[in-house]
Image (tube, rainbow, N blue to C red; front, side, top):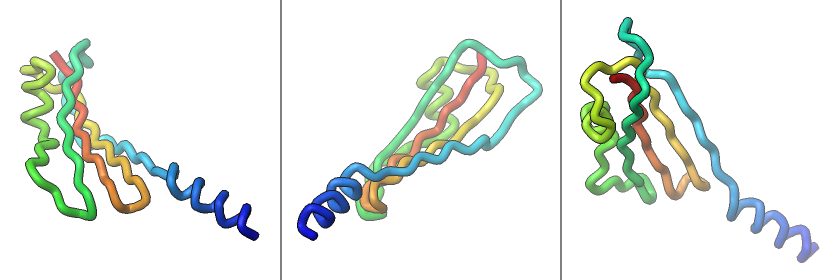
Length: 89
């Protein structure tokens, strides 16, 4: 029984979930540039998180946005990482 409990705790320690969703697409051609912006929240407390489209475009040097994706990584519901991914030229 102790071995079973240890296996469960180890599995929970490394459990995570990642979801990527398309947010927007424009008629601009798909560009070669990719910009990302992200932030991490612990126990749903977010401090200085800027996962915005504007910041991602600036980080990638993008002036014409083609697509916008939003990715969330969740680690046991304790730590959540929010990421905005922008492609374009």
